[in-house]
Amino acid sequence: MADEMWSLAHAVPWRHLVGFENRLKSEDQIRTRIAEDIRVKGHSVDEGFATLNDAIRYTFQYPGDRYTEGVQDDIRKLTDSGFTMVKLKNAWEWPEYKGIIGCWRNSAGVVFEVQFHTLPSYEAWQLTQPAYERLRNPATSDPERAELRAFIRKVYGFFGPDPGAPAPAPAPASVAVTSGEKVTYYAIVDALSRRESPAGVLRRIEHAGGERDEAFGRDLAWRPTFLLYSAERGNLDNDMPAISEEEADRIVARVRGGSSPAISLRRANAGLHVGVLRGLTATLPSVCNQLHWVVAHGDRSPAGRRRSISSRGFPRGGGGGAGRHRTGPRRA
Image (cartoon, rainbow, N blue to C red; front, side, top):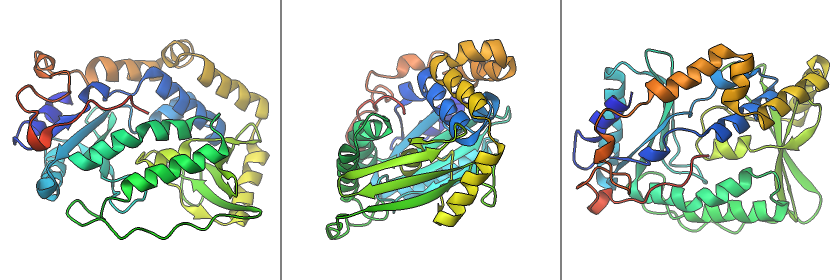
């Protein structure tokens, strides 16, 4: 898989494969993600792993004036290389992320993510990544969450609806919620569920003092969640359509009717406090073998090519001009 990515990156001098050293999601990140699936969706570890689209992520960067040409060409080349497209989204009009994101599956069934950026959109992603990581932290206060999202929106407010468009006029200041709460409900739909029968339910609560996201879990409680923040950041594991309070109540009732809180808590605790590889070795060898295979074989750098990568993440001699970039922050 890395062979094809390197071939694409070096086909033309203005295309760059950035953040290569952070292409693999860490064990802790996978553990946190699967634990959330266990609690919120009632998935097994095996099912949580099966719906994980970004355990491997590649990021391509293009000059703004070659972006459309480069993305279209690379999507075609990925298909020609035998990869099957799973999902593709254009996020240039999103308020908290800019770029195009896609997921592909190789012949061995391994799904990986590809992000397509310009230099400014990639730098904006790096600049806002610490704020996003704070949003994911359940200990972050409601007032800080509102400030963090306002900062992310401000950064991306300098972008137009596509790489070549001018920045839009400043948006009017949002109206603060002065009393009570505004609650928006979302269905959680992943690869193992349907819009008519979602995997779970989530709510965003906005109030005068800030905001927070909560998901109703198989432990029969509303607890903080990072799933909506991840979707707004470009993660394609879940679709999050807004729903009515009545539909949210029906999903909650379905979860209450078919859940065992004790089992759900044991599963979630196992996912949170046991290393993924060690835990899977004891309980789900087949999934563990898949993860080992991905790390050891499915995404191994081509022999001899890693030495050609500079500490800044681009091929030596190719770091000037539009291709210059900083090594990206830690994956999330």
